[in-house]
Length: 321
Image (cartoon, rainbow, N blue to C red; front, side, top):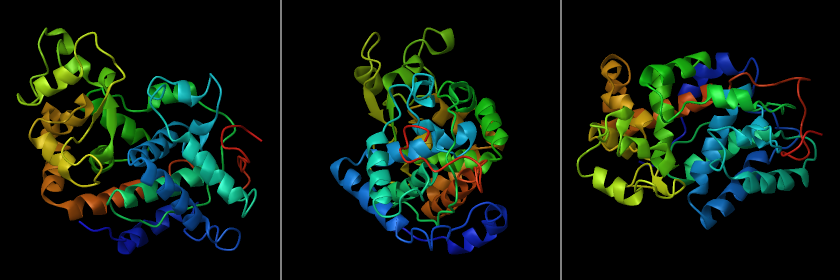
């Protein structure tokens, strides 16, 4: 489905978001901010389509820790980059650097790294064929990373559906947001280490996860043999890997979710009254998925932003001023 702007939905969220953020925040101080970010993301995307998923993931993994404050970008061994959910997997920092440098040359000291992540995520989805939404801006950058928060707050591929829903709930996100934002995996990739426990000795049973489709299991076992390279990557949607579409949800209905945390959205016992009906709706309606994904991205982007005089505008996204 072609990309579309969900202006009418944004109006319904404006009362929630405008108290802190605004779509016109840089209108007088850096009016070309979105164009500049879009240009740099496009350069990176044309070089490697996978970068779209990486930039989208950076925004998600930033917002779930200290709120959307750009803290995931900070260097240092005690930073969020080295938390278990992020180490050797989060990427795209060089693209953020390029965006920051381009903005600093035009409007120095104006655009926050946190806002760069929000805008870059939007354009990453755009270039992958997904929906558009107006990005609310005005976040400022945090000065402290939170590795413990990253370890504790970010959903894990090994968690139950109830645990995942609870982590979203803490952030003010509901069950619909869980299913909608999980749909970002339609362009995502995962390391064997995040799903190989499903392939051989699931939950100590000595057998594979019974929810894995019989024709998918040998494919994954061939890619991720026992004792193999845990960093080998698999697309989370092997059918339409680079396309932002609703195929991910059809995969779940057919037992072809790669991560356990994906498949539980359809197969967990508690899914019947929570997430499964939403998966079924999205699997048959790209329009419903796109609409709700855009709404959920706006909600996620409004998790505890620093505004006003809080935080700072980092000159270098990797270090505090």
